[in-house]
Length: 63
Image (cartoon, rainbow, N blue to C red; front, side):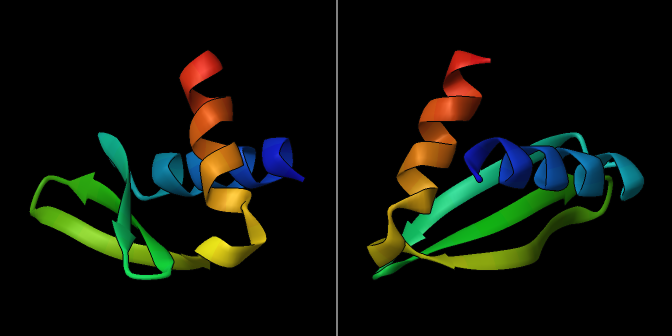
């Protein structure tokens, strides 16, 4: 599940010609932004309670 989500985020960033992906904690959510030439764009919010955001950060840090 984590690997699939990471691949989806990376693919979306490539399609949108993004230079960076940001995961920013905000209360009980993680907001996922991409950086494009004109600035940051929010692309998704993940609920922190399911643990996926932390696993996703760990997975991306190891790859």
